[in-house]
Length: 104
Image (cartoon, one colour):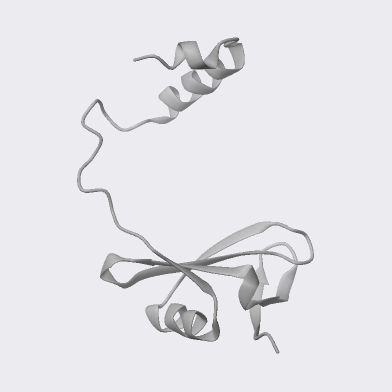
């Protein structure tokens, strides 16, 4: 029998998922999260959790991904702000040749 896990969807409330429906992300410094797709509304959900909870999910049979932080910030410019993101979205919308526009 496949283990069942009780989870909470922000739209549907309490739902039951199986270990096959849950992905656990383990980051350095005991930063942990899990994600699942709601069986009722099919919405994607991600939650931070205590390392104890993450390890229990892994022991139950959930898929696990070991993650790491980038070594350093991207060296070619400042972080994106809201204005830059909006400009990028507009440029993508107006662009007929995305591959050509992506040249650096």
